[in-house]
Length: 251
Image 1 (cartoon, rainbow, N blue to C red):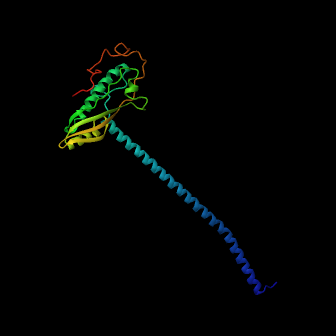
Image 2 (tube, rainbow, N blue to C red; image 1 turned 135 degrees about the vertical axis):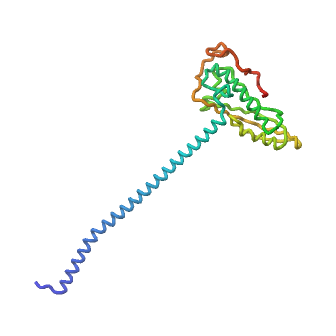
């Protein structure tokens, strides 16, 4: 059968259209797959960025913790009393009866420390601070004097009340500021009022001090037996002149 030119043209167009259709049917899925892969890659990149940010947050948190630990070690080294009773500190690992004696020594050491501090700046002390004595009871000395376990760590906290000093305005200001640098303790002075006629002025303010107690062991509680030299494990008597009547030590 002889085909007319028109028929040949029509058949040719049909073949081209079919070929184009087959190619397009293969190409479109590839485009969809590429778009899917692109979206998936974007999701992975977003998750990677989130992980990177999370890692950065973790690294910052670790650095912050290390910085705080380093700062605290500086505080421990310079702003807490030592564990050696002979050096003015306290060791809470000692048995409770010994601790009643050691706490008296510790109290007297604290009193000497505040007596030195209150003279800073060259002022004249009119009314100085007094550290209260510890209790006689071996069964309660840790709980009442060192506030443990009411507070999660042993610490002495004293409101020293009103302090009155006399001097020039600069001396009084320096005297009050010096409490923030008190060795072995954290002290806060507040509420300064100044009266009088310059250059002889009178400064009045209040002070509170905090002493964090070092150590990793605390002597366990003991039953109340009346305490004193007759108690089991108790020392023979008071040592070092730390008596209940020694409220203010002048040196």
